[in-house]
Length: 103
Ligand SMILES: [Zn+2]
View 1 (cartoon, rainbow, N blue to C red):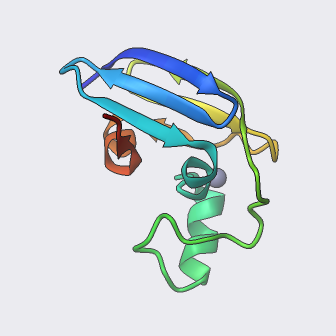
View 2 (view 1 turned 45 degrees about the horizontal axis):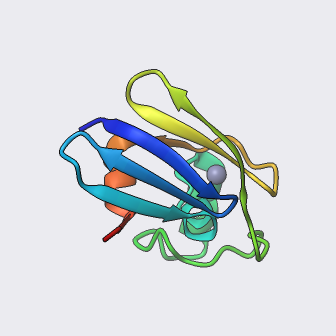
């Protein structure tokens, strides 16, 4: 599955239309909390709840927004957040998992 279009609707909302025409919406705060990088994963494991990617992290500030995003190769998207965190590489498979269905 590949993104057909990636649209930044606002600084807190990005939508992805996949090549099967399904559309998903990504909010900056939940996407930030679901960050798959090693540092964030460790933190979630330490909190004793590595099964829930949406667990609220202590370090995650409120009102987070997307600063920028870029494609990584042909398999992932890297998001940069307003807390300057930029090491999360979100694979398309993972995005499919965490995205909310739009319309
Ligand atoms: Zn992270």
